[in-house]
Length: 322
Image (cartoon, rainbow, N blue to C red; front, side):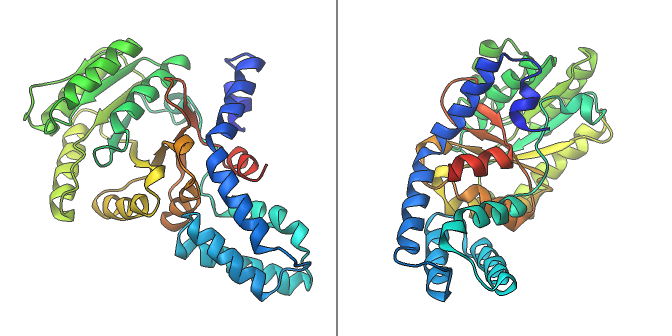
């Protein structure tokens, strides 16, 4: 089921249409950049030849799709040209849509994973460096889940950064969601343990655990996150169900480097991309998902509390090439 069809169960047609428009607006900068570059790549050409493919390779790399993913797309296009023996440049957008859709990982996520996956509470551990919008994403996730009928509990396990706990508590007030916290400098694993105990006692549907946003060396990061996971399993044996890596799309290739660091340190199985509306580097969504074989589940397309959307790859590609 697509994103807008799913959310349409609980929202008016007007609201669903507005969210679709917000996605399109959020990708305006990326779309304008990519389409202009594509137009230059095929200027004066009627067929997709080696020169067009070379130009297209440059377009994709400079749109932050990433070298590895770009080469895979070019290989796929070369195979299409070889198989079809002729590919008109006017068909290039259509073919690119198809190939990019195939590279994006995963089915459209759902807004009620606790019922879809039969996990209660459904535990999400959120990781990512400082400054990517991690705490804001957690607050918006809490809002999204509440809008879909969930009872949510937040855990402030980022106990090392000044004001991190206070920021999460403020989001708790804004969304009317309880936040379990300790003093700054407390053991993050202890906070996670207390959060899950509280969530079980409250019969919560979803638990979202914030973690420190420092870029440790891999060993230090791995040890800390492993300790948090092991402690949570004492309360919910199969927790965490989701390890969500938050990345700032506007950082382009830096986001890919951060994905390398965190996927090496822990078993990331979901991505959230923030600040898509403020960048022309939205192609990074394609590169990260394809390179790391991890689905993008959420995207941020604005500053409002409702501007975190479930990621539907079909809607994304359609908006990008509209």
